[in-house]
Image 1 (cartoon, rainbow, N blue to C red):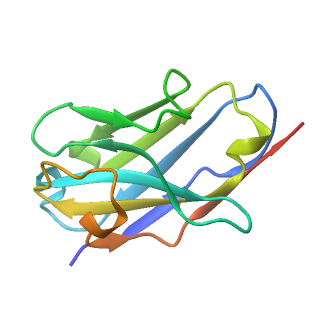
Image 2 (cartoon, one colour; image 1 turned 30 degrees about the horizontal axis):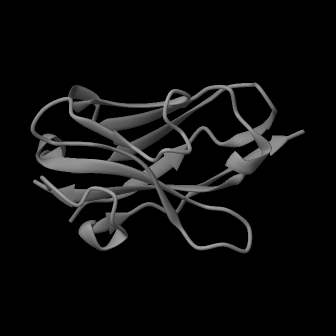
Length: 125
């Protein structure tokens, strides 16, 4: 069982930056591929970024490439999402997710076993 707790959301102006954190419980964090998803108001949840358990392989949605960076610190059981050059369309609830030894399908919600409760990011124009 893995418990995930997101933090770092808030209100920011367009062009600004935020860093989200997701702290995981348990001693096997390094064996989980970690992902970030988001759900804009009135829309379905969508993939944002993922980082594989077996090495610093990362994967991004086209909409955030070049602006967002996912990273992990296995010693702290934490995954981060650095978000730069934020746009109003980045406004959403952001969720982190974990999948045991996931190697492919990192952009699919169904690939993930555990989810956090989410943190709200609001970007004003």
